[in-house]
Length: 212
Image (cartoon, rainbow, N blue to C red; front, side, top):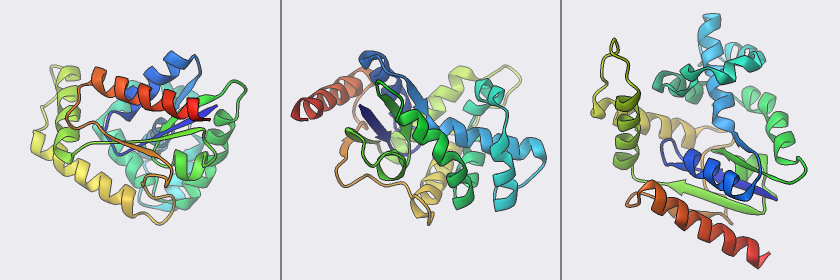
């Protein structure tokens, strides 16, 4: 059983994917974290994520980097979005994601091209979305909660601009653009809190699995 959970940044797909995996008793992979690690490694290397060669070289990041909380920052997310536009980077990380999807017992994968590229054969495909304003506010609230005393608070307007820019990069890239698979269940969480969104997704997944 493979469940693909796709969607734009801050749509709530990551939280939903983790809860869904825990409920079903299967492992979960946040594929976006792989790209964040690449983006962060580019910065560590002193390279430029907009340059394909620099981004490809960063795909050899150490596994320990995946445990670093710095990958959860807005800066790392922006670096990941820039590095992920390169076909070479996506190809380098494809096998790693596909192997995770094919493990015995099944898995849940959260990303932007799981249902269209990584696991087009997924048993259930979800596309979680929400309005730009809603996603920006969620991300801003997360950052406010995690902000350290020495850090300067980023205005909500700046977060919204970054969300729009990242959406544009993800949707318009030539290789594996962000889009819902034709047979995906599209779920808009704009007006739902986390609990209501999860209940809606769980019901949709159970119905899809029962049909199979």
